[in-house]
Image (cartoon, rainbow, N blue to C red; front, side, top):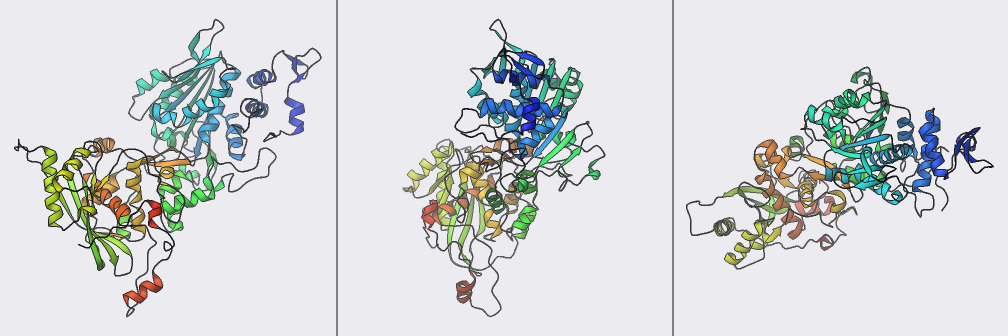
Length: 621
């Protein structure tokens, strides 16, 4: 296939090695020696004195390693990767603040491999990340992807434990002294431990700190105190910018302080550590604002941000795109903007709930033809502490919106003195009593069946002589359902797992004012629950904070909120409860029926709920 990028002719003439009459590679009058063209380019990269020539050699090496004789190029020189490599060729300390799907980890994985291949017997590259599994889904996965097709020609071997590429010495034995190694380092690690991990020596030492926001704050001090003593040292820190006070924020601090820059406009600045910060904003993605510059290839890059993906993200964050653009989530993960707060990242906020009129105590419209439904979170499933049932009415409110209102939350307790009836039977019997009390048909009941919860569901099936209730599973992967009916994005493309899908989906109903009466404790737990992003099938996906981590941080289990989420999932599945745009209140004197005919949104009118796995099953209370 044609080469994706051809360097300017004057640079080829000036820098590219050529074969002389003795079949030896040479640069001008200097003879490199015999070997392959790739070997000659690697020698040139290792010995180039000017950054401009090093940049040229990097891209020529990348062409030979990951594009030449391949059906599709594995590394393409577009305007973002071009900018990253150009600065990496010049800076000792480089901070890369990138939006999700900006290619920063992939490009720096290539930088690590080329540097090591140029001097395999003298170079050590350390890759830091939060953990092994996280790294495999991020930069270490990229290194694996790029190393695998060239492993047969590389002077090294990849190992899984530890995760490393080790240089193979002339005697045929691998050594851990040189190569590329993954070093896991979360925020809890002490300075001494981090210092021991990266207190390594090599003539050429590179530290690439991926997701620097989330790793130990001692990394930078250990790097400047230990690794900086190596003859040739470089540190590259990468992350989605969050707080000015986290490790990445401190590494990126402007030379003249934060007041000297505009974090929403400036794309780069000099830093206090005598380095450079560069920013990659998704609205300037090569797929959105292409550039015809001859320095790099033009075209479509499927792994980078697109306008469609940005619009999908805005839809998830809010119906009103202008408001969603100002949200912390969008500005951090899509625009790579720092904040002056180091507060935890949460998806729900009290302001969201208040604005939606969703909190208990807020005015609730009248409902017509309401149906009673309930969701139950079990104490011995998903790491919970107590069994909670949330009861709600669902129907059309006085404004014509299909909505739900929470009317009660009930707790189910086990009798520890009862030695005859097992806990599953006690819980099942109390669920049956509450369903009778609130007139909830079993077809309108959802129960968390995760883990040990399956036993309670089986016992309920025996006691109630029915299996009509919905078993809701928090475990496993996200579903194939669409996130919104007017978008083709599926849950597994947007969310990391099933628990994340259930947690994040509920927020969409707030924008259409479709949920009322959320109890105070539920709102508190929703707003306390953190989240993060991970690499998914198509760019970044959202992952809700695991319940075990939440319990350690907060000191309790979010069982009330989980019960509420089970209820929302029941309504999605059994009631065709779909997120809709907000509807205006009708004018004075206008009848409900005439207003609904004229004003109710038609955006879902042409859609069949069964396409989403929904099955309408409305049973009047």
